[in-house]
Image (cartoon, rainbow, N blue to C red; front, side, top):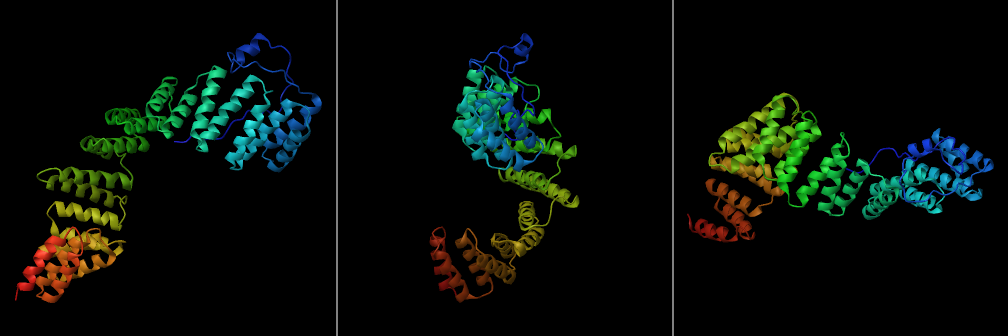
Length: 421
């Protein structure tokens, strides 16, 4: 979302000497004909022009070492303020190309401070300063610079309002960002996709979820084959808790072949499971999730991973296919970094009275680490009870008793197990 691309600093290879007067044609071609800044008289002589041209030509030809030497020489020794300013402009461009954005900002500011550049050069460089500041995350300075540029240069462009909206968004000025981006979009018939991202994010951050969803849907409708537009509209709809609408859009994309990435398929399956959890009967949605996951797997889009196998396990469990759920959780546990999948497999094995297998998976899960440690120990205790291992069950329950969320239940169960024969 940052303003990017190569900077165009108007480094003409052969700048001409300025005349005292301009023809009407020159005025018509001026980029800033209504600027409030009075254009200064340029103090460039042929003697000053030669080394300046040589330095700019070296820069344009990619000879950075030569450009650095010649342009710095102009800055240090030329008596022409215009030549110094243009040389600083070139050095700033060179710093930018070398990745030194902070250095480029300082150098460009020095070029502008001399104050001798013609209006077209001056305002173009000032705008590029705003771009540099935005890229360097100097959001308020970028906003100040573009505001000054517009006020003095008397020029409005879609790009400048997009830059303003970007800076406003980064500063948390969401209403201002919305206004600026909408202005930018109104000034061109080819708005950048990133502008709409800022607009959607600004709506979302300011609590206007419906407006964010509307903007995202409009962008997607205009570019239904654009994967970025698809991702944006789905993300915004999910944030606005419009899961059903997100599913509809993703299913259309799936039908027309534009649902292509692993994250697309995984997210659609997750949406089905989330929707299923809110219904009395989760099985229909779980089956749809399985269908999506199977399709993605058959196409080679969904890879075998602990996260994906965990998702398969959740879908099978919600569809009441316990056997396949256990298999999926077991596969997930083999490569998982934590023990959540193993514990889920253990709980399902316990529900089928497969105590020995349940114990093994639960111990494995606890060993790797789980979020609900107390609940896992409670399940482990039940596995030990099923295996008639009273002392091991008591030990597991004592572990569960140490966890705040299961302490009370563990104490009650501990009394029951201790009293049993």
